[in-house]
Amino acid sequence: MLSWLSRRNFDFPPLDQALHEPNGLLAAGGDLDPRRLIAAYRHGCFPWYQDDQPILWWSPDPRTVLFPDELHVSRSLAKVMRQERYRVSIDQAFDRVIAACAAPRDYADGTWITQPMQDAYRQLHRLGVAHSVETWQGDELVGGLYGLAIGRLFFGESMFSRADNASKVAFVTLVRRLREAGFELIDCQMPTQHLHSLGARAITRSQFADLLARHLDQPPLCDWRS
Image (cartoon, rainbow, N blue to C red; front, top):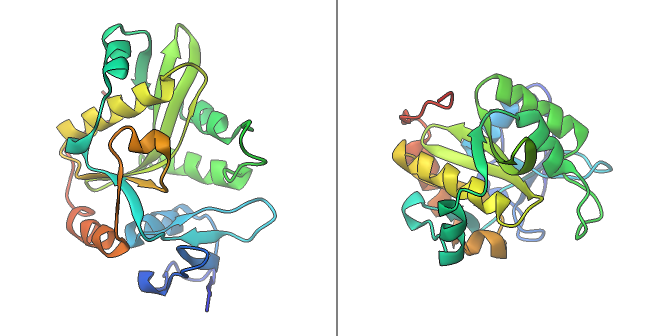
């Protein structure tokens, strides 16, 4: 039985109540209030839905994650980074990054990053919870990603690329910075070949929940402003 959320509180059902089919669907309804979004990530779920659907909340099993020490950088990607083909910045163009991630793509019919989703994550950025990494060629934004930092966990949301390896350069830069700051995990949510090539792997939902409990309230040594 799928749980429907009210707007009166920000509680989510236990993760083990998520459906097997479709994999990980935990609840529906509620809203995108920043407090609910933060509560969702802390609980182990995230919103993912289309414009013609209610808000759907997911906690897939298994969960795709990347441990910072397991980052894999191929020889070709390492060469790109040594050549400094791209300039990388952090939190310099959050609005542009999320808009680019929401733009139509050749392989998809629509976007799950609806306008209300964009507005909600922009609010989280203003609160200092959501962050972006940008990849530039000169003054042109050619790649990037965004996600949430809570405790010593980073919850990746989406990335885009308009030039070869631009999103990978942003991702590698992020992971290296998070590793230096003592982050324990990057949540990648769902599996893709792109992420697996960088070292992401699957863990069980229960393992993911254990990592949340251990690391969400640990203070990271990370200054996003520098």
